[in-house]
Image 1 (cartoon, rainbow, N blue to C red):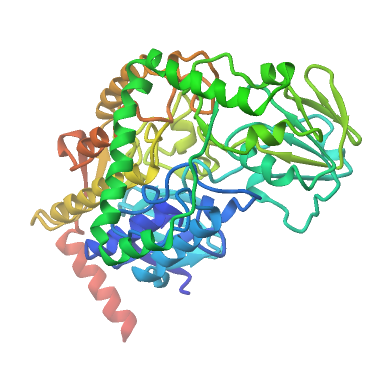
Image 2 (tube, rainbow, N blue to C red):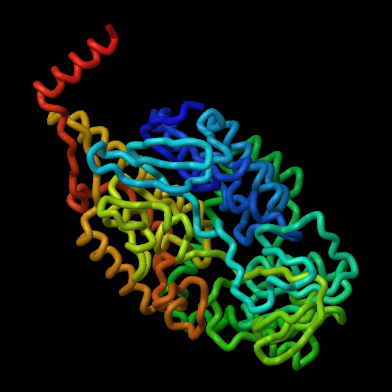
Length: 514
């Protein structure tokens, strides 16, 4: 590889967002791009998360690209292995491998205001790009809390997203920290193996049954032979979830029936009243993500599982101490404590037009026009950016909408640079446009269950604002991202060198050649 490679577009990350961007670039006729990936293979969160029981809580026919349907999903909710294989298939089918730069972690990225391009430093070389599409996603960097004494723990410690498959849990005393989406899949998977499992739970989640089943051979054959049947299946799954959005965003009290069903799910599996009380949330269902599992409550009710209704306070040797004073001796500690969502580490490495990092710009909270463009960062877009997350549907729908916006953004740039005015051009979103968009989003957020449901969740940033989720339907977001409104952007131009300067440069080049 050359020491310095220039491309039109640099995509960061090779999960659903990054690969989707790469496919869309090729479909737009753009082949001058690279995909910078810090790992040694594609897959994003579905590469990193390989813990026992790892699966998606969105039906597979909806959790896939509309342009790359998979008629051979083995289950309605397929596991990590099959999702990762799907992403490898997409990479090969759409010719993305030549564009991959694996093992290239972005160390620093800075906007060059004179050249109107991004200078990118990776662990294996430098790049420059006219446009950067950051698709690192919010589930990239695991978060382990700063626990006193943890560094001196003599046993095994790892995060669910960095599972140590070489460590045998059989017969071990294990502390599971957290009861989020990963934990409710891990607990049923390891409970039969471990000697003792102690589950540290600050706040119980609402858990509904996961209506999972194997997809039969005839069904898969039908989807292969008559592709429209797969499209109809996807459409039905999408439509049901679109109809549910109003209960989350406008009328949280309508979730009462769902809450009763969730309580019945607990009562059916957990007969001990004291344990049932520990597992029953006190906030409105939907305030945190509703989790899906048919095996979590039965596993927690087993005699080798103990639920501590408290967070982890400290570690003393081999003893873990809860905030309520409960002490338990363990051999291993597994953290299911989530990710750096509103404080993504890569934001510290992106330096914009004013010399400020993205993290500094977002110190008061993440903001980006249509979840894509941040003020002060020309020709820089995020996929799965601020307020693009979903509480009840498939993120792939939001990703594809953002890719529509990306495609039109690049078309507008092409028109600007070929308009006959000369010079290179960049698009810088106006701070006023970001402000208008963000105020509209936050105003809608006030009525949602995520804001008024009585819980604290990873959806909220340090200031208590929900900068993570989209307070509307995926259809609404698709309309908002259909095309770029140039009135929301400032066109920044770099003029071509003056004729005399160009002549002098040509003379110097000629002299050098002689």
